[in-house]
Amino acid sequence: WEASLVIKSLRINTLSKLTFDDSKRFNELVRDMFPGVKVEDIAYEELMPKVKEALTEMKLQILDNQLHKVMQLYESLNQRMGVVIVGPSGAGKSTLLKVLRRALQKMGRNMPMYVMNPKAMNREQLLGYMDMDTREWYDGVLTA
Image (tube, rainbow, N blue to C red; front, side, top):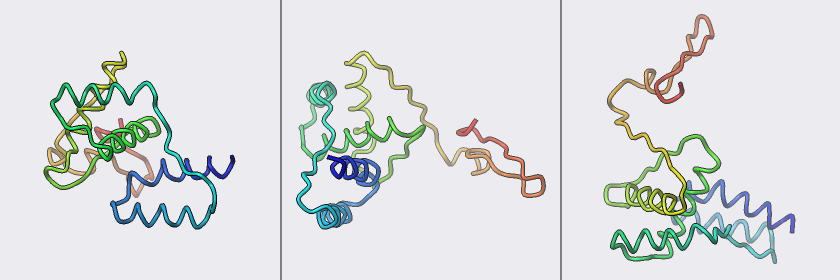
């Protein structure tokens, strides 16, 4: 039981950051490190049907991989103050976020979202910086 909790924790915090090939290697490594332990993803019984509804309403095809990515995004948003979604053009980054947001709204939950162009200001203004002379931290727009 404890090993399965360790595996769940490792998978939740790691898989969403890996490429497809690296995630296959990661899963193989976990199976080698924890032989015989059944690996399951966290199930969100209330959210999953709402995600499928949102996909249908948006006239999108329901794909297992896409459902899995929506759940990974949901888990990341629950664990972190901010999330950055990266990928090539047309990979579905915006769609993923829109689907999750609509599904959460169907559950009566609000998902605040602030979109900004990171090129609108320099890095120090955006993220903040530390004055190397005084060792004082100055917040940026995103860290304030």
